[in-house]
Image (cartoon, rainbow, N blue to C red; front, side, top):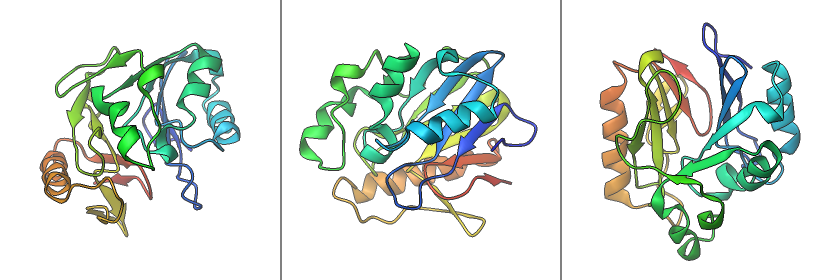
Length: 203
């Protein structure tokens, strides 16, 4: 699917919980993927590329919001097939050893990013540190397009922005609430919210 009036294509999260939402940003023939998904993501990734009129070799950048398996397990396969560079938080590898939900990403990372880093993509795509759901969690604010890729720091439920439930082992309650408040405060300037699960919201 394509978000109207944008160059953002996406696949919704797998209802089984094995794959997160995956986003494809296009700049001409250049592609950027946010969260390739879980190990069963191969077919959905190729369908996404087909819908965008793109191909695997067009992908130059892979961004990971965090290292949980449903977001990141297919990152290495995507990297190898596309010859793309993987960006994530510096702790994306180290947190994996303490959390059964996480992948060990240390060995596939090409670049590590922190709060305020601007990614090599048109439109000032900027990193936001949003820990809580996982220690390595980051979100992305696309300033010129008014789009916020929240990952699992914020969800959309029944047309409203909500904080994801604090149910998983890696969640740190106080940090999750602070990160959620940080993203909520940005909603006025970023009217399109692209979460890690559930629906996109355009306010």
